[in-house]
Image (cartoon, rainbow, N blue to C red; front, side, top):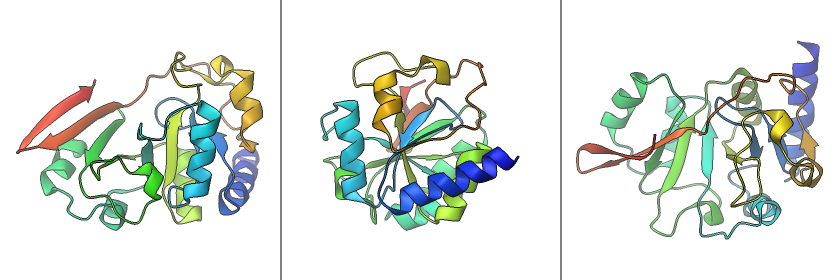
Length: 189
């Protein structure tokens, strides 16, 4: 437990100064930063060698946070999410209060309520959402556990969370859905 508390303290300090971190989520390991800081978000795009028009996911620790970052959330989405056990990211229209380079060109944002203990505690302490994008160079396979993450990524972030590195459980990226005209469109299952 001490290691996790130390990791939260160190990751929190990194996020507050606009740095990027490598951390465990409820899906695959993520590269993260302050989702409201465009300079921090740009660092992730550069590390991943990813064009900044390809949107990334934002994590929040609980449902009520979505109201701070989406202008018109659809209530039916909340009901849908409650019935799902797999980590599921929802694309919402009308993003607000987030780094402009994180928001898709159509004004949408992908948000997931992250149930992983470490990420939840970190976001609660930080008081802001965190970017979550898979810990790989764009176009390369998504690492399914910490040991699959390339040295380029590990050395390219400002802080690597030590908690959960030994977990060899192979994880999958989250499902991605979008609510459109009263129905769910599955983008990635």
